[in-house]
Image 1: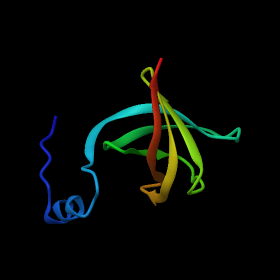
Image 2: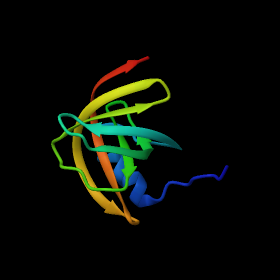
Image 3: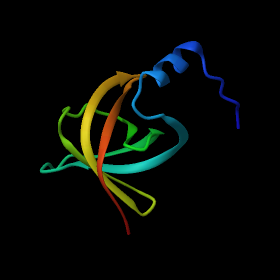
Image 4: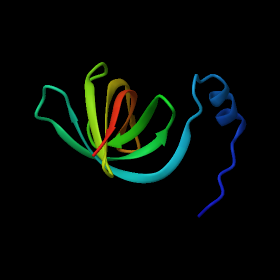
Length: 101
């Protein structure tokens, strides 16, 4: 495990956010967009009290509702942003519901 050190830019970004973001070990997920047959695999990059950030292979429409399944947990939420990064897409989801199987 490597130590992570916050840079001044990271600290400033955290101060401007409503909720603290916590990096996590990449966790594989299965996700799909409500009302669509589009399915995705990806990984969780960050979590907060009100949402998650995923990395997936294709762009998704902002404003769509996505369901994400991982480790017996299912959550739904609105896609708030989708940005290209390192050949993949980083999406932010504001959590609406969470339940456990």
